[in-house]
Length: 154
Image 1 (cartoon, rainbow, N blue to C red):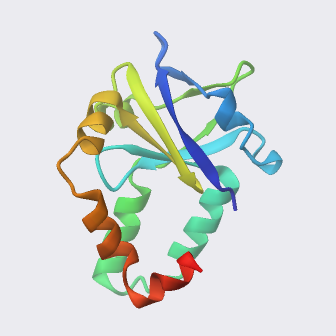
Image 2 (image 1 turned 120 degrees about the vertical axis):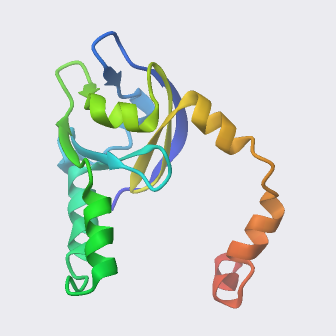
């Protein structure tokens, strides 16, 4: 599984293509061969996985009991808009217009890379989210301060 890291400011070209930053390309696994899957994120952003990482995630999801309504609803929402993409000869990705519209991306965007995914945000939405009044220290305590998370500090 890939372990992406970084934040990249990008622009769509006139045809709606994204030039994948060289810093991200260097982090891509050779087995990905420039193949990705993009879909709607949990917030109003897009989430992009390398094809092989997408397959690992969907393998986990396929193990959910599909006789449970919430599971079926999650599976539908998670896969909503999922689209396979491939880097072209010069390192660009064509993101479907329907997905760009969902995320409110017109030209300026931020790629936020972590773990096995790359979140794709409109620059305005990303800045608004990151500049919110949320107390990061309190959030860190709530998320990381429980006993199960103690071993992360060891």
